[in-house]
Length: 143
Image (cartoon, rainbow, N blue to C red; front, side, top):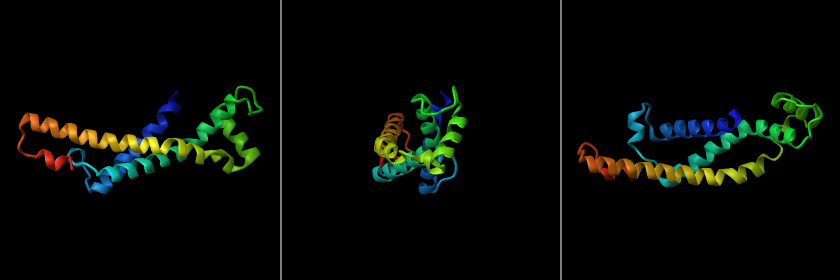
């Protein structure tokens, strides 16, 4: 079950770090008040999902191999399954099928993060407008 949370945790961490770097901010508050363009958010989302999937894919492949009974040892752990894959197929065997996994997940993740980025900017803009806070104009936030 912990494996299910690893990929999204890495994805969002990478996305936020690249976002902060791209926007040129270092602290927490200022970065939240600035929005990425839709294209930038889409590209960063695709890159973040690719990084997260590349990091976690050996675990995913090992789990699939265990579930399909392709590992000879009975009741193996993920590490034991990964070691057996490396013995039989070499290190590249841990990444067999990665291209298909990336094609399946990257587009959806990129779209989701681009929509999330714009939705957050508009929601923040609306909250500021409703509070009649004149320090930051809504048009400055949701570009």
